[in-house]
Each structure stands twice: as structure tokens, then as C-alpha cells.
Image 1 (tube, rainbow, N blue to C red):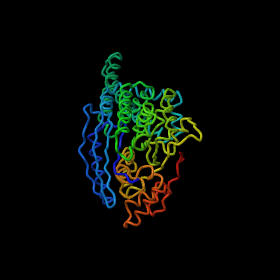
Image 2 (image 1 turned 135 degrees about the vertical axis):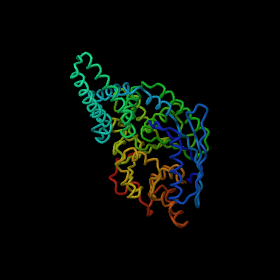
Image 3 (image 1 turned 180 degrees about the vertical axis):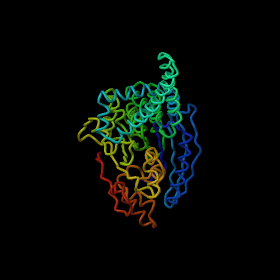
Image 4 (image 1 turned 30 degrees about the horizontal axis):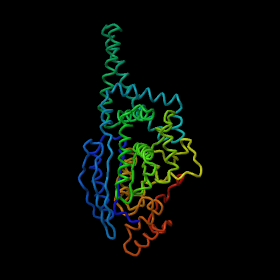
Length: 433
């Protein structure tokens, strides 16, 4: 029951920063976690496999009454992402605009809006900024052309010069404002998502297949008490894809080895699943919905505009499996409850910072804590079933309270501890499974 060995398989989302920056963030946040709960942590150095597709490190965590060792695998896609971002700006812009208007005219944007208007607004944001910048540059080019005409140059000369100026200045403006607007990154993200949904990125599929094989190998050979597949942001649907493919390779995946859990954080399944061409993805969702050998927890946050809050990943895709459904369990998380109020108010409108809070350290002890999920002694299933008891295990001042919390966790009954639960004060999303 008490986790001594855990294996985390973290599926990278569409984040070009990659391993180096993620590991630095992980190291910094682990230190904060240790200070918050007064636990000792030791972080190992990252070790990459020869193909550089998987990098792993270990975390040893110890406090009074428990000790846990975690193997942490980071599944990498940054080589693909950086290649996308190196594409010429004009090509990125033209393809993104083309795909966006296809989404509008085929009704997919309408489905996004009905599912979550804030996410639909977020998708539209880079196109809106692109339009504003294009209009400003067009006005500049227009004035430039009129100036040339005033000098007596003919139209067949001024028009090409003004057009060339428009293209050059718009490209420079996009490039040098990228750190403030993220327009090019987001446009590349939407292009990739569209192509992935339409199975036009075979290199991604091939790597996901290799990751599925790796998961099968880990499940057969690991001595861990639980294997937790973590997918954050677009890593949520990539992790879902990986697990579904692994189950097709080994139907007994979750029965002959450690318990297998899928934890998705800030997920955005509709950006793949709402495409008519993504029937293969919807089939995988259906298969996981009725697969009793694995458990799937989906955490959502209202404040995060980059996830679909209060959206059922199955019903939203028209997937109905009736009483056979066992996955996912949908858990709402309130960031306001895990971050100090003064700090929360500083970044609450920084959308990327908010989105990454799912995988960063808490500033207040709480039932939802990413690093306690990764490093703590309570298995993920029991943590989500009895969040108050799970928190009492690591925050109670006396051994008697901790033992009572352990008894609650082992009995499977909801805890009655003094801790704050995952959904205190938050209107619950549909809790299924």
C-alpha cells in the first residue's frame, strides 16, 4: 500500500524548451516541495538513452515514517518541435491561416466554442495579433508606396516595392516581438495539431509507437509499486495515444505487473478529437474508457484557459459506453488554494505560467500536489479517492494521526481529516468512473 518504488513516465507536450529547461524547472520546484513539507529529497543526474528519445533521473524522498524512490522518464519530442519552429516565417503564417479558416468553415471552431469559449478565444488569439500586425505594416507600406508615387515612379514599380516592404517588415515584426506575443510558436502548435489529427506527421506516430513498446517493456520488468504515465497539456493526448497503443500490443498490460495509472493535467483532447479525420483517436478514447486494467485521472482547472475545464473527454466526443465505463475520473483543481494569495495575483493573467502550475510545486499543503504525486508515499489511486487522508499522512504532527490516515487510505473509505480536499469551494466537474 505504501509506495516505496514508483516509475513516472512523463510525456512531453508541444514545448520547444525541451529537456534542459524542464530538468532545471523540476530541480527548482523539487527544492520548494522539500521545504514546504520538510522532507529530504535527493535528485539524480539525467541519463539519456543512446537515441536521445528518453532521458531518466531518480528522486529519493524521505520523511518521518516513509521513504520513496522514484524513477522519472522524460519522453522527448523537442527535436521535432524545434524543427517546426525553424520553418520560414512566411510558410508558417500561410499554412496556419489556411488551417484556421478550414476549422471555421468546416464547423470545428464552432465545436471548440461550444465546448469551451475561452479555449476557442485562445486559439484565435495568435491570428488576431497577426491581423493587427499585418494591418499596421500594410498601412506603413501604403504610405511608402504613395511616397514613391509622389516622386513620379509608376505603379508597376511602386506596387512590387511596397509588397516586398510589407513582407519583409511583417516578418521582422513577428520575429522580434515573438518573446512578447508567442504568435509564431502558437501558429506552429496549431499546424502540428491539425496535421497530427489528420495523421500527416508519421515521425510522431513512429516515436509514439516506440514509446508504447517502451511502456510494455517497463510494465514487464519494473519492480515499482505503480507506474504513472503523466501527460501535461498536449502531452495529455500524446500520453493517451501511447497507452492505447501499448494496450493493443499487450492486452494484459495492467494485469501482470505494477498498477498502471494515466494522469492527464490541463488536457485539451478536442484539438485532436474534434477533427472528423481523427476517428482513430476517438477509438482509442473509447478503448481506454472501458479498460479496467488501467486507471485514468484527468485533472482540470478553471483558471487555465489552455485546458477544457468541466469537459468530459468522452461525452464531448460523442462516445457513449454506458455502464461499462470506468475511465476517466475527472478532478477539478483550484490553483488559488495551492498558491499564496499575493503570488497568485502576480501571475494569474500569465496564461502559460498558470498552465504550468499543474507540474510545479505548491506553496500551500494541499491534496493536489504534483511533487507529492511523483515523490510521496501514497499511491495515486488512493490519493484521489481519499485526498484529505493522503494529505494528513504527510502533514499530521503526530504518528497516531498519520496511522489513522493510513488506515483510512487502506480501507478505501473517504477521509475525514482536517486537510483541504481537491474540490473544496470548486463546482465539481462530472466525476465518472
